[in-house]
Image 1 (cartoon, rainbow, N blue to C red):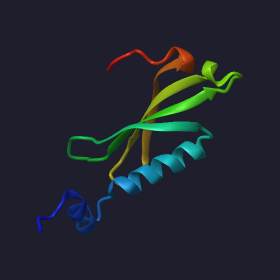
Image 2: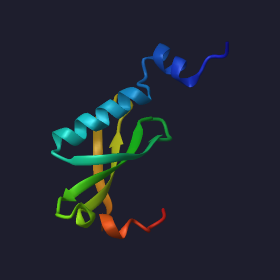
Image 3: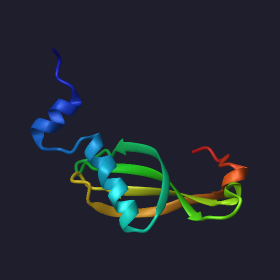
Amino acid sequence: MAATREDADRTSGALGVPDVVAAVQDLAEDLGWQWETLAGLRRTTGDAGGWTATLDVVETSRVPSTTDVIGVYEIELDEEAGLLGFRRLRHYVRGQGDNRRD
């Protein structure tokens, strides 16, 4: 059986995807964000390693919910899932959709 990247991560002590997802969820909760979707997760390139996650967050809840304001945030984590920084990429009204393509 061939070794997978996840196996290599376990033996090297590096965090795997489930660990990083849990860290992102914890961070969002610590910041008081009502996050809805983990829209993206990728390893960063370079010597330092780490992860970049993209979250959809409810910034303003409204009635009806189709008028909620959703913020799209990018979170940068180090190789141990420690927070390096975050920024809002954009925001939109839920019922109007996010038609921006990156």
